[in-house]
Every structure is written in structure tokens, then in C-alpha cells.
Amino acid sequence: MTQHFQPISAFKKEPYKKILCFPKAKETEVEKRLKELKKLGITHVSFTGPLQIEKCRILGKGYVGMVVLAKNNSGVYALKIRRVDSPRKNMTNEAKLLKAANKLDIGPKFVKNSKNFLIMEYIEGEKIIDWAKKPETKSQEIRSVLNNVLRECYLLDDAGLDHGELSTIDKHVIVSKNRNTIIDFESSSLDRKPSNVTGASQAILIGTGLAKIIQKKVKLPTKKTIIDLIRQYKKNPTLENFEKITIGLKLQSPGRFEEQVSLLRSDKKLQPLIRRIGPCSMRITKNPFQTLVEAIIYQQLSEASASAITKRFLKLYGKFPTPKQVYNTTDKKLKDIGISGTKINYIKGLAKLVLKKEIDFRKISKLSDEQVIEELTKIKGIGNWTAQIYLMFCLQRTDILPVGDLGIQKGIRDMFSLKELPSPITLEKYAARWKPNRSIACWYIWKSQRINSIG
Ligand SMILES: Nc1ncnc2c1ncn2[C@@H]1O[C@H](COP(=O)(O)OP(=O)(O)O)[C@@H](O)[C@H]1O
Ligand SMILES: [Mg+2]
Image (cartoon, rainbow, N blue to C red; front, side, top):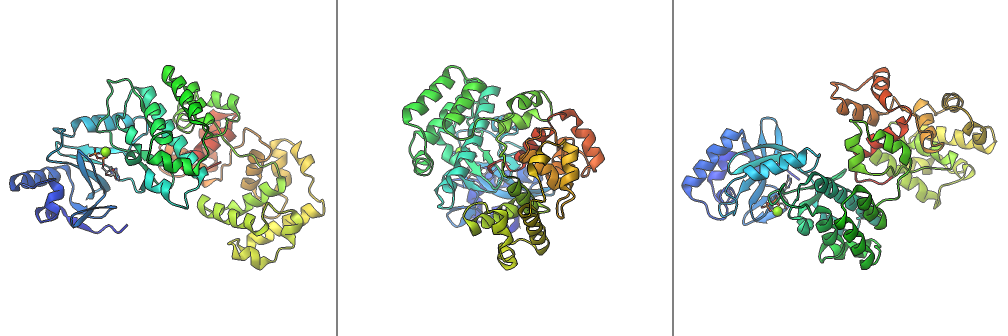
């Protein structure tokens, strides 16, 4: 989206005037609101976005507000402008409720508000209904997004905050690349009995519109089963009954490492992540050769590019190849799907060792964590990180800490508000609190960085 910013004085002219004072602009009101905007520190506005109102484009429109992209001296934000004909007299209550949601790490981050304006984080993405409709949106992604949305609903229920508009959920969830966001706390309340999970699940699964689209793409249990699960939760809104919904609807698989997770749940830093993500759905790869090849592909790459390459690699063979198949593949073919020359050498070297039975994976699986690392790092292309990934995802060792992993470094930096990325020693110190379950802690940290993706 191009963001062409203009000084807010643009609001004095037609047709922008009408956005500032929708649906009808009176001169005195325009002047008053411009002053109010200046006081809030907003300097520029950009008329871009998916919605066209007369001759201008904006981010969105509702009963209360017009939402535009705006700028102050610290960055770009979404600015919600109270409609002149809005039933709400000011933005105070919405600000209060958005702040309450933010405490649970839900909703666009609140920045500032005044009588007629609310400045918040700009959420780039698509409305859930538009996203779900797209042919390229896969059923697995839909499951993952629904799982997240319902989980946020559960957190809101648990905190006593009723969103109030989740029956029109198609308009109130924005799906972005790595997460999804519930928006618009305008009709929310802390004084009603919350019905976020029940309202949202009915709208998503049983109603019209979004539900119809979802039913076409995702295989769901019968209506009766769904209604029974929702009823059970409604009667007794516990975490356990909530998980019965998500598992019953196959939005997620039953959790692994439950014992470890329940121990980690008492850790202050991890608790919010676990609450948000839910049970641990770590994907275990039983095939040692596959784990190592995938780990080599992932070395030094972002999640997105590595997973794209892995998918193309699989496509070359139909299913995960044997060492022999890999060994017999031309370098060109591997290069064409995006694997670097160095990595091709590593992968083929590994295939050769396995073919010649020079690695005994069974024997390795019986060694201690340290010994496994020692053995595996003898192989060309396998460093500490790759060996640690092997320990976690193939051997299911539960206390591995990949100190060289950029995602974990960033995660720890943010979690403990460090100024820079921690060195291996510093990282080790911070992560000590999760012993002897550091693999599981790391999985939650990774997962929190790409909450919409699978595995
Ligand atoms: N933080 C945001 N980032 C991006 N777009 C937003 C944001 N908040 C709202 N929008 C867009 O503006 C529309 C109207 O906002 P909403 O808060 O629902 O207003 P109302 O309270 O009037 O219903 C939304 O449907 C969405 O498309
Ligand atoms: Mg709305």
C-alpha cells in the first residue's frame, strides 16, 4: 500500500473535510477538530486504504468512526475519527476498554485519545472474511487463525471483558502475516457477562457469511457436536472446556509435553505466551535424515524463505526423499529450488554418509545431549545449532537451548527488555529459569513470533 502523506491541513479541503466530520462538515467543527488533532501531535494523514468513500480512500468505516492512516513524530498509526452523527459522545470509553484489552496483549496497541479521536497501532492486513475467501488461503491456515481468534476470546472472557461485537466477527478481525488482531472495542464492557467465545464461535461456525466460507474450506464436526461443545463451555467457561472446543473442532492437535508445559506455566515471563498459544503442538520428525536435511535448509534463513524452499524440495520427490534419491539429484535441480551451493554440498555429503552407513542414528539416539552434539558436529555442515535442532525435534530432548538461534535471541531480548541481542552466555543465564524444560520454552518463544503458522 502506498502511503502518500499530506499535512493535516488537507482536512480543510473537500473531499477530506467530510472524513474529518462525517457525514456533514460544518466549518466550526472542522476548525475545532483540526486544533484537537494538532494537540494530539498528529501532523500528517494519508488517504490510502481498502475503502473508498466518495473520492477518498480510507482504512475503514463503522457506526462510530472513520479510520485513516496518520502520522505523528514517532510513527505511523491508525486514527479513528468519531463521526459527527455517532451515538457515542466521545472516545473515552473506547480508549479505556482498548487499554484493558491491551493488558491481555489483545487489540491494536492504544497510543492516545481525545474527545473525537483515538490513535492506535495500525494493523496491516485483511479483514478475516476477505482473507478466508481467497483461493490461496488453505484450510490449515484457517484452522490456525480460528484457533488464535477463539483463544483471544477466551482470554477476554476470563478477564471479564465482553467485546460486544463478535457476532459480526467478519468485520472485527484483521489477519496479518504473523498474527491476527481483534479490533473495535467500541461496544465493549467490563460490566456484562462476557460471551466472546460463544458469540465468536457461533458466528464463525454456524452463522452465515464467514461461516459459509469456512465450511467450504474446513471440514468441521456436525452442527450438533459444535453446539454441544459451545453449550458445555457456556455453562462452565473453564480453560478445560475451552480446549475441548478447539480440539473438538480440530483447530489444534492435543498438546504434547503437558507435564513440562504445566510447570512452565508458573513462570511469569512464559505464562502470557502459553496462555495465548495454548497447548504445545511441537511437530516431531521421526526420520533422522529428514530432520538434519531440513535443519540444514533452515540454517541462516528466515522462517518464510526456509519453509518455501522445504516445500519445493518435497515437491521434487513427492514425499521426503531417501538419502539415495538426494544423492542422485543433480546440483542444478537443487540450486533451482533455492538451495545454496554450500548447502547442496552439506546435504549430499550427509546423504553419502548415511548411504554408506557411516552414521549410526540408533547409537546416537542413546547418547547424552552433549555427546550427541559432539558426534553430529563431526559431520560437515552440522554445527551446534543444527545438532540442537536435531536433539529437540527428532530425539525429543526437553532441555535444549539453541543459544545461537536468532529467534530465541530476539525473544529473550524482548521478554527481558534488553537493549541488544544477548550473547550466548547472557542468553544461557536468562533461560536458566526454564531448566529442565528449555526446549519447550523455546518452542513457545518461536511460536509467539509466528502465531499464525503451523507446527
Ligand atoms: N487499528 C486499525 N488498523 C487498521 N485498520 C483499522 C484499525 N481499526 C479499524 N480499522 C478499519 O476501520 C474499520 C472501522 O473501524 P471500527 O473500529 O470497527 O469502527 P466502528 O467502531 O465505527 O465500527 C474496521 O472495520 C477496519 O477495517
Ligand atoms: Mg466496528
